[in-house]
Length: 290
Image (tube, rainbow, N blue to C red; front, side, top):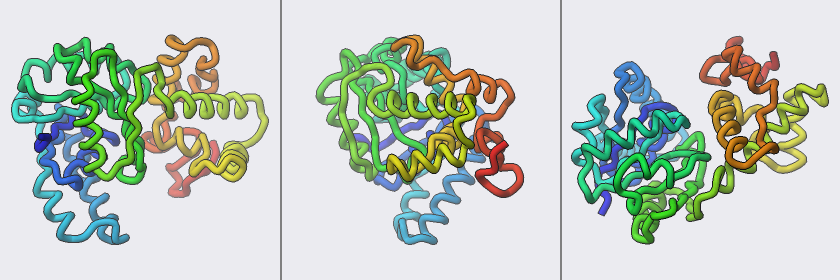
């Protein structure tokens, strides 16, 4: 039975997973070696609870109980030893994920389950960084975690049926809808999203339309909740580029990143987190194309 969840990585995804974890009734430890990042995550999580209270998404009693279940830690060894489930939520780079999984393999109990929050990478490959492939799986949460209803649960080559069911139950307790699928690069959602987002950059560099026009066409014409440029600014242009590079390597030419996307990343235009991506957020007015 899962009671204590450790989330490794306190970025946007990690803090979101920690939030839905405690609301789901689990004791959660959010781990990051960077103390400043941990404090930022703590502040952001408190803001999410405040907004939840303001808009009636969570009751005061539920918020108080949830916050009591959440702790912050910069010592992975200390946190991992008591975990029933460890969810890795670090950047989409194999070298970083490898380091995390090698460490948690040393510290976690043999009964502990491992999950990677990846949108494109192979859970089979990530499981090879540890020594429990039967207990390793991917949980693909979506940004923002507290608003997006789906978790894609992706089985690796040796993931057991029991692990898949345990992780599905955890996601359901977190208030999420689930799909349980078998591994293939990009899974379901990232393959489609990467194609749409990349094609939008090709359209932009060809001069087909402005970012607002392209976003508006996709939202109103295809009933998407966000335009591709709004979405990439939220996710991060560097994250999207990493995903496209991985899919290009694994699935071929149709995923080759648009040169304009690469240029924006080189310029440090990473989206909301840097203040400027496809749109400029530094002026205090969102959705100003630059």
